[in-house]
Image 1 (cartoon, one colour):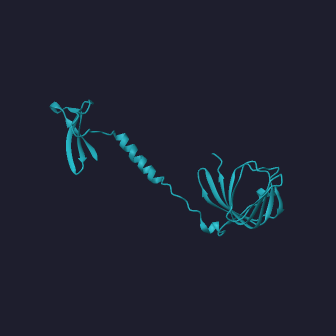
Image 2 (cartoon, helix red, strand yellow):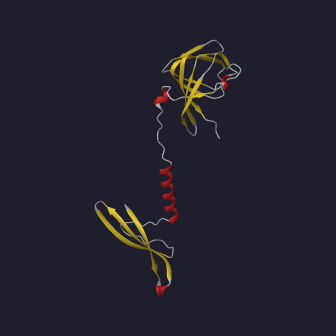
Image 3 (cartoon, one colour):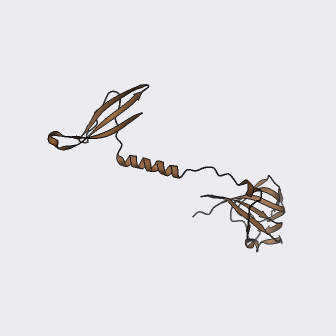
Length: 198
């Protein structure tokens, strides 16, 4: 490890010179050697046999400190999903108005909770009473990852192909999906969506 301490000096006749003296400590194993070198009138620093002195401008030091402080303030940690909300506890009642035009069976009563609202992703819980929506005229306009936690999800494609998902199953419903979406039992899912760019 080495460090440098600048020291102002006075020139001939008391006139201040733009001269910087650096005290350099160089460590080699268990030994420490202190050397002094002068930077005269902006010229190259005299070279020494054991160490190469180095001076850092004040703005570089200030920037480094500011960056370190900012990094400490922007510390990022993993976010654990709330196990109570994943179990359906503490979910807030939500509006089912967005399903009014596509609801073909049931009377949806939904509950929701946002577990993570990041820069690019939003993770939420969704719970609903039984119901079916039809997306033939209103296809999905986003990719949606779904992890089923309770009940059953049945997706039926326009050609009649049926896909069933029960607790523990995961599915991605891509942009453009035009089939039906049917929820049975006390349906609850974890949903991951990409957020719209701002």
